[in-house]
Length: 305
Image 1 (spheres, rainbow, N blue to C red):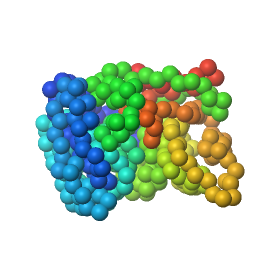
Image 2 (cartoon, rainbow, N blue to C red):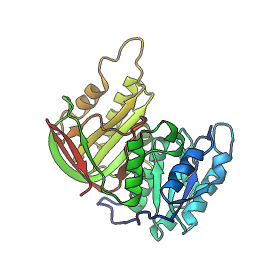
Image 3 (cartoon, helix red, strand yellow):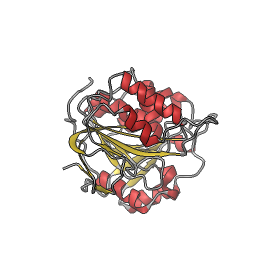
Image 4 (cartoon, rainbow, N blue to C red):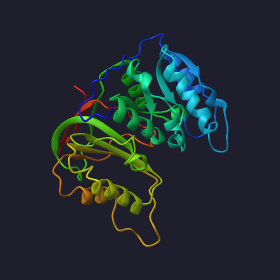
């Protein structure tokens, strides 16, 4: 049941005493979830750990069916108010089609994560109009900034999320609003043309990535452009593109130059350096919800009012 409009599904924000689950739909965990449990219980939440948290199957947190069953358990459990993915890595695409997400239609709940979890976010937005949270995951808590963790708490508990960002000379000024979609660029390409692909028209797109070659970033953005996904955006937010690599013969453009070259013919606002992605200060964004973006030479304002 794909949708082209703004999200019409509301999810109850968390309150103290609510029960949340941690599951691992992709790569296995190298550390226990002590920091995550302490953080979440400190917020007054009850934490349930999935079987995948301690599982190992090659590089994955259990085989595909095992990881799917763990996620399904928490989707089906009406007492669970939010599902937090422990980490990304690789593997969500191997199990997503085994999972029945339809119970979320009658019992919607927050899905939290980033990176490989972009696939889950895209799937529930495309098929169920369900907002979700792009934010810090349990594996990243030891290295996460205090502010990024606070934005996750704010997003979960319904506090107002608003960001004021320093100006960037490469930003393209303008104002817009629209449902925020996106996440990890590589995963957006991975879902393209599938049942998990989203309608980009009239949306504000957020992108981030890590460890990619500059030419690969260029190729992925041009693939989105050739698919018609960039021309009808209302705005573009570029987050962290970290640990980028270049070939022995340099590609010849920086990341901002690549982006602006690809979207040069469009006139929507573009914001660089939003603090989200594979960085310690990975601030939370609510995907699948209407966002307002104002890009000026004096700075950038983002809110959900």
